[in-house]
Image (cartoon, rainbow, N blue to C red; front, top):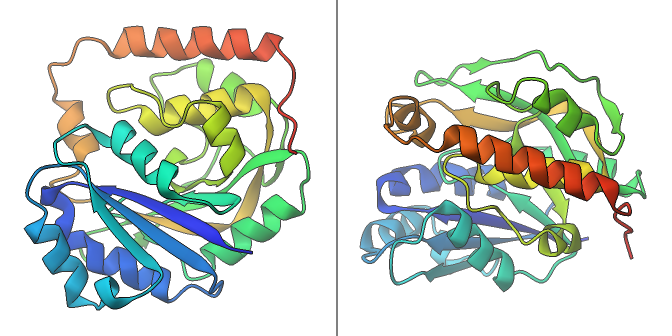
Length: 253
């Protein structure tokens, strides 16, 4: 069963793309396609980085550009529109998938008919190459509808209970929810909370994502950002969760 992997990338992250590609090339699940979407004007650095590992000559890799800077949510959604497989995996340009990630997540999702998404554990990929594990506040196994949203909304200033950047999705659920949300630094969290409000999920008891820690990391920049709308964004996510929770559960067709 094919999995389409979407990656939004801007020029500053071009140097990480070879490692992202190698993590896909080494997957134990061979049936994947990679949709790389460039956010910006001049894609020369990105195409050069992809050419280093032969990704541009790999028939499984598809590259396109926005033609302007539109931000990560818009860029991911453009990549999503280019996909056609029933399953979509997000992979941020500076992260890597564990070798068995697609195999593990696809098996978990297909074994849970009511689930709209599957995730595993994320390990920090430190500058020296070592990996650091993190305990999660939720246990492996089924994630009933609303569980993740309820856990996060107790204190939405904390990170979500599972890492939202490494989720494998039923594509139709992401499309029904409108894709990644237009929130500053919370694009994937907004989508994950909306998904939890309407659908079951599943957490695999395995590491599936290597979350790179580095000085250019956008999340580090946002910690010192003067952006004043974070509280309003969290309020919007809460209101959306409340409204979606009152409606019918997502029904996989």
